[in-house]
Amino acid sequence: MNYAALRRSVAALLMGAAHAQPAAATTPPAALPTAVVADNPAAHPSFAVRVVGKGRPVLLIPGLTCPGAVWDETVARYQSRYQCHVLSLTGFGGLAPAAGGSPTAPFLPAVRDELLAYINAQKLDRPAVIGHSLGGFMGLWLSTTQPGAVGPLVILDSLPFLAAIQNPATTVETARPMAEGMRQQVSAGNMPLAQQRQMVASMVTDTARQRLVARWGQASTPARVAQAMYEMYTTDLRADLGAVRQPALVLGSWAAYQPFGATLASTRAIFAAQYAKLPQHRIEMSQAGKHFLMYDDTAWFFQQTDAFLQTHYADKATYARKK
Image (cartoon, rainbow, N blue to C red; front, top):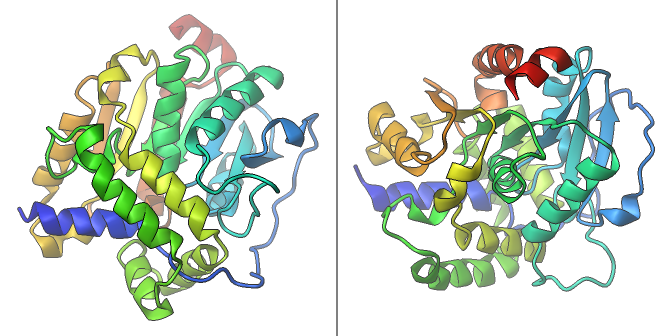
């Protein structure tokens, strides 16, 4: 397997459209009906929340450069049975960062801490978490930081230490120079649009979705994206996974890496090695989906997630018995 090429491909998945200059405006998808809940947005300046539906709470966390709208189809499916708390991180997809903040100030640790505080303030009873890419990483980080704060995890195409995809012996310190170089490059915001579209095509199959993801990337703040990438590449959660109490469903993709020599078995082995210390987890690999599994392999994603939530998060009484 050509691990160097695979690493470049994964970096492309993360970088997406981050190098493009921010666009003046974007056309967001149609809004879904929103429930009104008591909230204090000033308490979580690193993200905004949209709440839709009724039932047990579910947090939906998007990946790099994507707003909460990436979950619109997922929310449409689940809003009749769950109360969906849909996050949009500031600096991604057109949501401006809070005024006065430093672009190199810690960002993902702030998201983690503010989200834990949000769960407490809203009195959410161990909400399930569905996270894509960076969002899946954040779900793991919430669980290792406060194991009792959240419920079952659905993790879409994410790893607890992205920098170690090529070499499992990679450490935070050995990864730091590469991560710093990446941060400087992405902060420059100089990726040509054609190159950006080529990268997005490696993440999503459908051309309409490609345009949507690219538009979100254009509307993102390069310095914020660069900082988030740096923090993901210099945060290793592997040793902390043993603290996680809740079951986790890990959904992986491999088809996009096939031109670089990857196979389903070799890619699954990378996931298995990285999640080895996670006590209750199951890894499932999509046969054909690229990085955006909820777009590329929608029926499979819903089949897997429906069954997992039904087993581990069916209703309050059932979940209390499993605690």
